[in-house]
Image 1: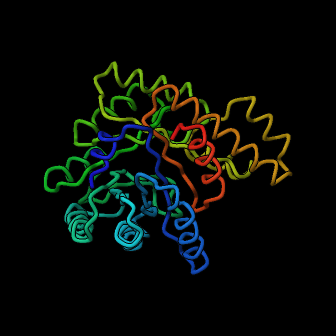
Image 2 (image 1 turned 30 degrees about the vertical axis):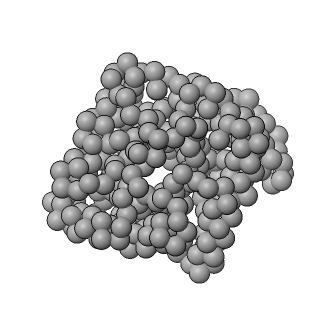
Length: 292
């Protein structure tokens, strides 16, 4: 089923999870255990990432197909432009279509490991907007795209970045999922600007529960997201307290989700890092409060 249809027919906030294809047998077991644990919460959909340079392409399709067909959860495969010509992208899309997958998150993608700059394939695409156009011109997938409430880390001009979000919608994106953020003001401002610019598609906030200060410092550096000073101070206070950091992360993300849902967000997309405990606790709290 198309995720756009799921969103349009929902009479309450939806929620979804993002996972990445594991590289080891231990990682495979962790992923399967997490999916089984979160399956009971009846997510509206699950997305599976696409490794830098397309390194997990086959595993992405395999796991997305398994989630949809074996677990009975609607699933979305990520697809990026990195390292592929147009013809290769058509071949990949044919394979995704043949696997019975209906939804794709169209991304530019990150540089392959070991490379600091993103370079397009000489016979490929340079932007996710082009990928969305390529997909919509030949296939009937439901297309999602990413957006950046604080602006893309490589784009210092926020207005240009916001214009690119509009271009993705014009190219065929039926919904947007945000990069992680920790200050809801950025989300609400982005949505207001998007609506003023005529962007009418659902904009789903993406949240990542904090598990360690070192981990979130690494993620915010990569993404360009910022930490509010009060949150940063509390994280410093529990820097060497693993249980305290996890508890703070759960409390912070729960409060953030509550404010977002009360403010009109259509749902929450959780970046799980293939871990289930924090997300499960947060969603249980939201469901108990009848907010999800």
